[in-house]
Length: 467
Ligand SMILES: *Cc1c(COP(=O)(O)O)cnc(C)c1O
Image 1 (tube, rainbow, N blue to C red):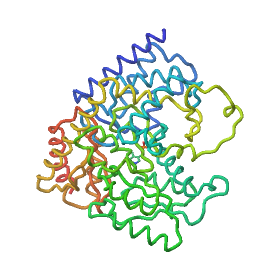
Image 2: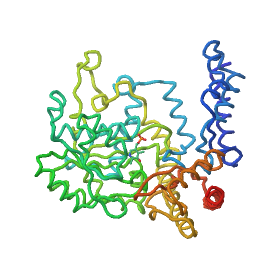
Image 3: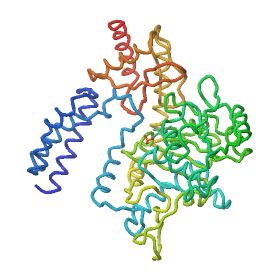
Image 4: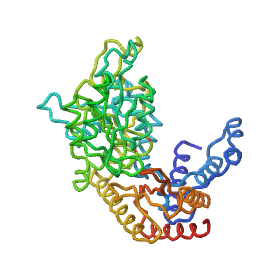
C-alpha cells in the first residue's frame, strides 16, 4: 500500500467518524479498561510484526475511533477543548510529515514565518502592535499549551524582578498573587519556578470570585509592609470553573501604581477579543505585561497550541539564558530563532494549526462561532435556571455553564458518573462558590438548545432514581 492509499483510508475513516457523531449514532465516550483496549487494538502484535497499512490499518482505525472520546458528538459538552476546523487537522499532518523543528529558523523558515505572523495577529488583537511606541511592541512564542505558557510568562516576570534568580536562585521574599479561581497551573508554576507553592497569596474577590481591585491594592501594600516582593499578579480572562473575567482595567491600574507585573491568563477567554460584542469583557488587557492565549480552546485549532505574549520588547528573551555551541553561534539570520524565548528546543510548527483554523473561513468565521457558543450558553443557563430543582451558578460570560440539582455535592458527582458511564452525555464538574457543580463547556457548534433540554430531562430523571 502506498502512503497515499493509507492517507485516503484514514481521511475516509475520520470523515465517517464525524458524520456518525453528528447523527448522535454513538456514545460520546466509553471508558473501556485500558488493558482490554490495548488487547483489542492488537498493539503488541503490531509492534512486533508491523504491517500497519491497508486492511490492518483499516481495522486499527475502526477500533481506535470507536474508543476515542468523541468531541464531534453534539452531546460533548465537557472540557474546553476545541472541535477543530476539519481543514486545520491538515496542518497537523503537514507538520507531522515535514517535521521541521522550527525554533531555529534554518530548520523551518515556513513554520517560523507562520508563527511570527500568527503571534503578531494576536498582539494586534490585544492592542500591542503600536510600532510608533517602541515599548508597546510585543514579543511572543507558541508553546504546547496554556500551562507551559503560564510558566513561561511567569518566568519572564521573575526575570524582571529578580534578574539574578537564573544564576543565584530565587530570593526568599518573592510572592505570587492570584485569586482562588486561578487555574492550577499558576500554583504549579510558583512551585516549578522555585518560589514554592506556599508563596501564592490569594487576593479577595467579589461574591462571584472575581478579583476585587481595592482588595488587591490592600494586599499588595500589606505584602510590602511584610517585606515581601510581589513578582506578579495573575488575573483570569475567563476563569476555569465559571468562565468569569476579572476587571482587567482596574487591576492594571493597581499593578501600575504598585509597579507589579500583571499577567492575564486568557487561555480560554482571550479569543473573545475577536468579537466586538464580547471584547469589552477584556477591556484593559492591553495594559498587561503578559498574556496567555490558547488556540486549541476557542480558536478551533487542533491540539495543542498556546501563545505566551509579552507587551515589552525583549521581556521574553530576558527570561532565558543559554549555552549550546551546536545551536548558538554566529550565522546569517534572515528570520527569527524562537529558541531564545522558549522552554522547548525541538519545537513543532504550532502556528500552522492556528493559521489553518483561521485561514479556512477567515477570522470572522471563528468570531461568529465564538458568539454563537456564548449565546448558546446564555440560553442554556436561562433554560436550566428557570427549571424548578435546578440552580445555575452565574450568568455566563463565555461558553461555560455551571448548574446543579437540589441536593448535596455527592449527588452532582453521582449524576455525572451515570451520564458518562452510559456515554449519553459528556459533562464535566467543578467546585466554585463553595459548591460542586455540573459544568458544561459548549465547544461543539453542532450542539443545540434541544441537546441541553434533553440533558436537563435526563439529569432530573437521574436525580429521582439516585436519591
Ligand atoms: C485551559 C486553561 C489553562 C491550561 O491550559 P492548557 O492548554 O490546558 O495547558 C490555564 N488557564 C486557564 C484559565 C485555562 O482555561
